[in-house]
Each structure stands twice: as C-alpha cells, then as structure tokens.
Length: 198
Image (tube, rainbow, N blue to C red; front, top):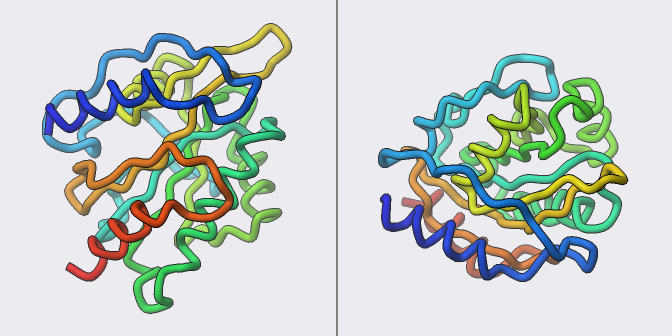
C-alpha cells in the first residue's frame, strides 16, 4: 500500500493541471502511513453540518476528489464528472458507493455553502458528501494522500491539479485518474464497477 501511495503522489507531480490558470501547485505534505487512507485523522464536516470520517458509511467503494466552491472553471467540471460517474453505475449498485468531495478552501467553504452547492447540483447526501476540514494544515494532509497539490493565489483563487481516486471498503487505493472531463474516465468507472461487483 505504501508503494501505491508513493506512486499516487509521484503521479501528481507530473499530472497535467486541471485548467489553464492552474499551472502551479504547492508542495504536498507528508502522506499518511499505514495501509488505509481511512486511518487519516483529519477532522471533516459535511454539508449537513455533521462530523464526517472517511469510511464511516461502510460502503463497498468510495470515490473521492477535491475542489472548492468559488472555482468557476475546473471545479464545476469535477462536480459534474463525479455525478455522471455515479449515475452511470447500475441503479442497484449506487447505494454501495459513496462520493466524497473535499473542499480545498476551509474558512470560506462552510457546511451551509456546501449544502447550497449540493442542492444546485442535485447531489443526494445519501450518496454524495461535500466536506471541509477545519484548517489548511489538515486540508493539505488529506490532499497529499490523494496526490492533489494546490497553492492559494493573491486574488483568492486556488491553483490545483485534479485527481479522482477510487478506494475499496478498507480505504486502499484501487484506481486514480487525472482526466478532467464532464464524462467519467472509462478506466476509473470500470474499476469502480468491478469493486462494487466483487
């Protein structure tokens, strides 16, 4: 698992930025140790204003990515990609997966603003959890485990790369993708479907 995490972080260094203004990113913090990303002790709050812990739902698979609410270029694409990935699963399988979208902007994105965003994008909280940590240090810790690098600009924008990561029921990385499109990455979707049928 450590080797997988190392490869995931190495891939982020060479990943194509999510959009043209996202040309630079900050150095990632140290990655979580152990065999499961669910071991990462990062406090999170979801769009219902409740504490959230990765893996708490006990789903067969987790689709996780990062974004922020005020991003008007790549992040709407990220949200739509996650939604289409879930909706392309057979209806009987959707209840076995949880989509987690983690804010890069603690202190600006709040449970209230995330709830409004979830409503706009028609994201049911039973499947989609939009979450935010309590501070930037914790956010960077989680970003490092996912291979996401970011840097805050003076104008409030956050320069970041985009990664979609599938975790199994134990929190181990199954597949990752840097493809930014409203349509799901076929390889990622196939890995997710395979995880749900096994």
